[in-house]
Image (cartoon, rainbow, N blue to C red; front, side):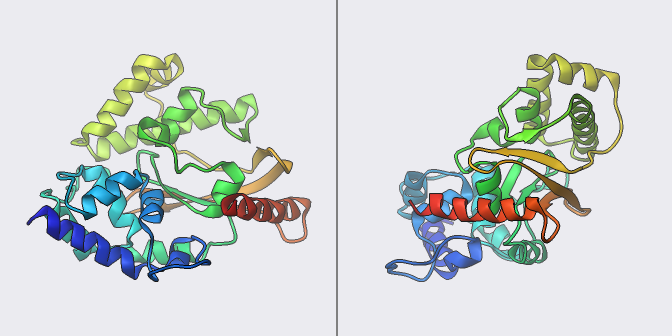
Length: 279
């Protein structure tokens, strides 16, 4: 397969995805009904220039990580995803590699959760997808690269967050994350990126190394979370963690009870977020 065939496939698949299906605004003058290159780049977490070079045949040998991100952004079926990997000269990840594929069923579920903040991570807690409500609530994650996209790395490296935890919640969160990562490492022993993440954290975080070497075992649980939003200030939301057993995906959903102060603030966050994205 040639790079030209890869470019043609990317353009064809991009043209068939309407912006609203990907949670993007569809207003304004558009030459095509599908995604623009910059929109595909935003959804896949790569540069517009790289998307352009792939489509024009000026870039070759995209990494498996990039191909997986493009498959998610383009909402490819299982067969189409395998075909895309083939066009890139790669084999789809095997069963001992952390999967990053969102099945059509999971994608349909996410499409129905447009009014609440939702974020999806893989079994290693690396960000795969966040909707516009999550970006409005927690800050736009589209610019995150490399380890910045991993929640465990951000937690133990002390990256600032809008979430506020008590000391007890912080300790429970850290122990749960390490426990889940240990289970994931056992389940996917051939994943070199996962092993590299663990080595990085053991080297640069004393707290992570302490918990890892102690052999903590358990599960990461979600609980009501207090968010310090720059315009809305503090709001406390229910936080529900949904797990996809087959792939190990984590789906985190934030919500508030109808008629509560938190629900009113969340609605305001939605309005503010929409305005910021349009500017």
